[in-house]
Image (cartoon, rainbow, N blue to C red; front, side, top):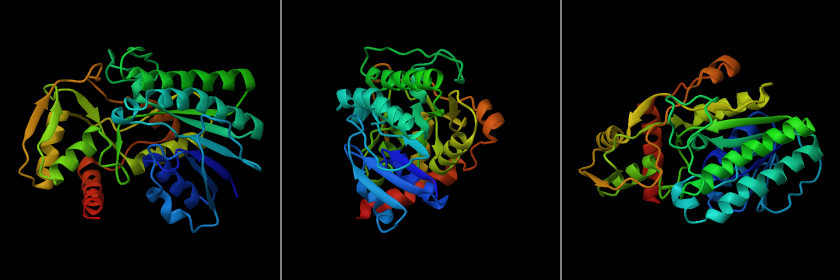
Length: 312
């Protein structure tokens, strides 16, 4: 039985990864300091002998007894509403937390996959974004605490790979959605859905012409799993290239929910990226992966989850 450590295990993506590796017959060790994660996301796993949980901050020394085969480092705030509120912790988990995870992987001779982000591309001057693009990031802007933490994470990971020969994988995750997202996450999809479901007007920043590309969580988890078990060590974009403007997306949510809410406009936040669309050529060629769940189906599943959360 393979033994897997998943940091950020009580978060949106981390909890889905725990499910996937349990399903693959692995013993899963979940780790989270619960600063943005929620134990409700993994409550169904606590009864399983194949799962254990450590309430721990990976920015401090990590000790896990016994052998480890894989480490998936997903601990980090991922929403602007979070990393603007806790900027120092965001920088620490991307730097110190990554260093600790890499050191543990080296000690255990484990393969490690780190969760990077499309935010390493910043407000891109290349469209769609491919892995060879180095990005357009403001290191001292409000979003820099997240963007630069992830860019440092990639640099540290590659240094361990080239200097120590560590088995490393880097996934660059584009906008992902699905069950277990927080209603107060602050990103476009949960914001629009929660506003629509509670009868509030939907807030669009700027004129709404900025674009995003939304990938359903099940597709993303499949891509991450395939990357982990592949032999490829360079960064790989995993996301859905189906691009939509945020104004059109807000209209989709209004139609889907049947709300009488209207759209209101607010100023565009500083350094907010104007375009987001992954070039997934590498994922297709190397991992034989591409998303399967279309946006209308994924949004319906997500809406069902959000309705249930609001009813509780």
